[in-house]
Length: 193
Image (cartoon, rainbow, N blue to C red; front, top):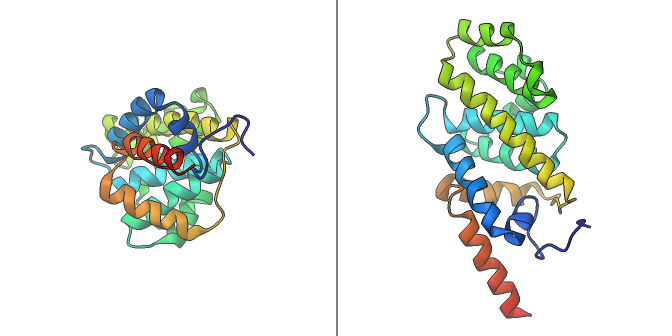
């Protein structure tokens, strides 16, 4: 049960966002830019970074949901996503992405855990300053999102299919329309009661 009264039936970050839509909008705008905006890292790679950080932070809702989004982008590669979350150095991803995931994991530990040698490795593998910057910002943002979700003890569905369905919607519609969709769902729920 959540620590505060949240709208019924809205799992993970959706409940707190529906509770406080004025704070939801800048968070989803940030997610939209970081995870779907123009970038040399693919949306799948950026979602893998988000899923890895969320896994490191033990935020089940976020690592399962962003893992499902990454898998959707990757044509259903759920085994690869699981490997990236738990053992990225053994995952079949590019050396550059492995180096960026190492940086992201360090950010999850604490920003000062990122050392010059981690950045040097990423550069050696072909990462640009923009890719390093965005990896750190994705990781930092997901540390905040993870703590928001778990700090309020939000509801985490157990059915993997529900995450797959939501993933398809995010890939299709993006994050930016989420506050409006949540507000509509709350209005419908209030009208039904």
